[in-house]
Length: 210
Image 1 (cartoon, one colour):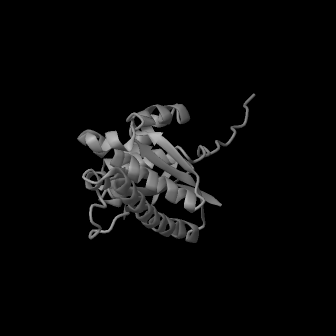
Image 2: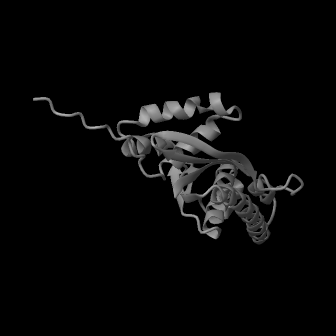
Image 3: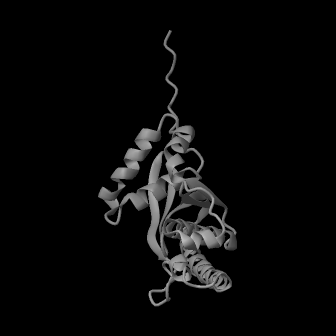
């Protein structure tokens, strides 16, 4: 069975998702979509920590717990749709790679709500965690990769092909068309790390001349 992997680069309230296969040194983009995990009418859903900053800590905790449950449910449904498409095309999905930030571990909620820069950091983590839990809910192995470490990870797995691989991904947009931004490119590269190394075409042995 052919194999595929999923990569996601997360933003506030949504993620850029790409599904890719890597067979015989050929990269094929199987699916790409924007997966929104908050409704446009959800009050404060895209910036939950901003919405919670004026609440008392117990109320803020309840608000964030409910917001996360809603985001996880929607993310799980969106991910399931992609998985169903890939399974329908007879692909076995090896896993999902989620690009992470390099931020330090978050402090207690009181300190987060008191510092505006930490609100943004917490929200980034909030939505990445929602997608990660959605993977677990769908029995899909999840790999978290710090975005700043992606270059090193590619060189480690593809020591001879990393540069060519990145070029292929960069130029893929010429064939498949937009959207093909940094979101899709990085999500694709992250997903490729979850796939086995492609088999190189075998060379026919030449007869030995005496």
